[in-house]
Image (cartoon, rainbow, N blue to C red; front, side, top):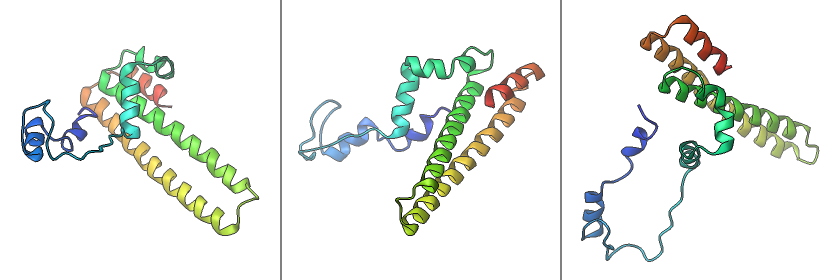
Length: 156
């Protein structure tokens, strides 16, 4: 399943847009469209765009994964696992900073710590799920032991 597959249900087709707008073919303005429309791209969309564009920073971050002889689906999960680990480490640093910040009052510190722990818990769940999916995918693909070991090392 492609990461874009999850997005397809939320993007209306051109035919659906024409029907909503009350007229027209693709590319023609809709008469009842709002005068000021603002489009924004989510964090996920920006991350996917950066990954697709192959920016230098992204390429170097994943060089070892990209250079491996693993199937593309496995590489995708390894990149996701690496990103989740990095975000967890970032939150752990932020948690330590909040704990050490003496300028915060007790209630603010407590609320911030609860928020950070909740985010860490969600990321940890996502990491466990991605790791389980990786193991399942490798088993389903019947990767040999050497390639499984390679994937396990890249996941760490």
